[in-house]
Length: 368
Picture 1 (cartoon, one colour):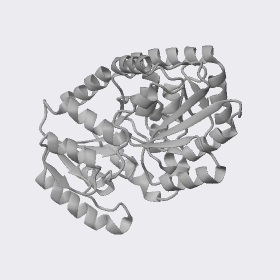
Picture 2 (spheres, helix red, strand yellow):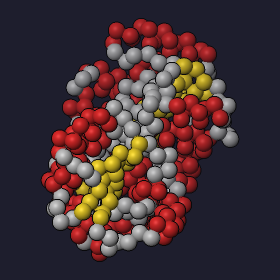
Picture 3 (cartoon, helix red, strand yellow):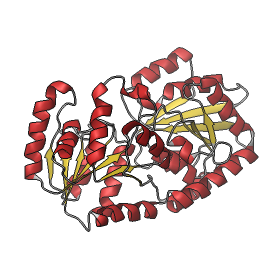
């Protein structure tokens, strides 16, 4: 039995949740699967669990130290009830902290699936326990799964991990490419049109840093008529809208969460991901598969997908001037945009297709 544990609460349905559902879909025909989920879990994750008739148990304990004894006691009870291989699906380092610790103490068979890793020691400033606990947990885990090759060096440095296995996020690259071409043809998209469209897909949170992108849009040469589409939901939505009003921008549009963003993505001119931290961003893979030239911040995850000047452009984090210049460069240079998008498609087709991810997940559990 595989017991998937996620403490990701609602309401946003992001990359970690999408990857979880996709991974379980690979395994559901071969293994008995159960879930431990947050009682406020994302609605789409709950729907996925219910539609597939997976047994589940509401399980969440706060990660702060005063909850240590409660967390350990609850972990003891749940591991007696559900005996199997535990998969801790970490949308952040401390996901199910006390359950991780209990599994490590008892030398249970478990896997850590990390979706987002630290980029510097500053990421541990809010909790000194995080690095200590994670080092111990990783040393006892049967396997630590990272979702991108660029994560490995940092992760090994911070946690002395020696048992890391890379299973990159993936997408159905050829299918996305075909659908995007169909949408563009049907829309009559004209590359010579006066108005250009910049698109960003992601949760509206501080981590995704859409505020820097909005600043960049305000700096773009006024001779270029450009609109910005923001796809996603999240805690920052109202703050971002107030920020746009202060900048007196009239060309920024919020489209909310889209289950299938291709109808917007396929007819855009530039995709931008201004994140401060990432795992391996699925939205960026989708943009590259769709043949859209991409710009992203130079951080682990992003710089695995984008080779600067070859498969896209990289810019420093929180640098609206550099981001504005990169957007202008692509919008003004059609031959560069074409070369970047063609190279990007070949890169994700070779390295991030969905069939490769499925084979690697099946291999991990077959070996266990």
